Image (spheres, rainbow, N blue to C red):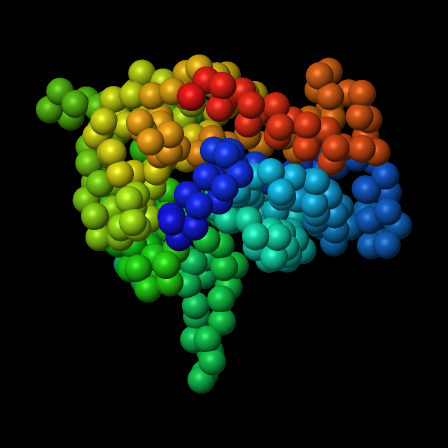
Length: 306
């Protein structure tokens, strides 16, 4: 699957991923109004509103971007209707030819990790038939339970030609409370990075591994060191834009081939119409604002890394 992602990035000259992380407050009033008229002010109504919101953004940007990253928590807050909206979003994005990175940060042990891997990346057997559950292409994975929490995902990746992005150094301010702690003089995130390389060697694509990692854009110096430790690992980079990460700071995340990283923006894209820079589009044309924000993000990153 990493080969497919790289192909899409190269074809569109766009090392970015749009985070489909919809809060109801991001959804324009005309979309909410229509959904509530049909389903009422219910969980079903909210789920319909975010689905229609997502669909508009995907339609407006799918020719420009290689991938999307729906964050499952934004859907789970609306219960089962929200999960149905998540699944509809995943399926629709794949119909549009986009790579889907499910952002669920799953991680447990043994049979539980296997069930997560099967549910999101693999196929479950029901009688004499098999079914893909959520069927994303990649999934974010929390490694802090160790190899017996990650290996089931690697096994499914090999079986289904799927991929994972393992949390190594996250973009949130308090990440250092654990991730930066020294063990024999080395930060924990470096030890996790070495395990990512080990897991990745079991699951290689042509040049890069199907086992990628997550490193926040807010820590470029750490990103530089980690890039050297993981030359064949694709880096998913959150934290650009709204969280303070800059295009200039992203240079170390990329390899000399111009590949090796994909940068996420969520509310900076999907709620672009709320920003002063794109307010001219207005609520009715929120998807056009998102498209312009994508164009600007691609130019910003490419100008910095090339």
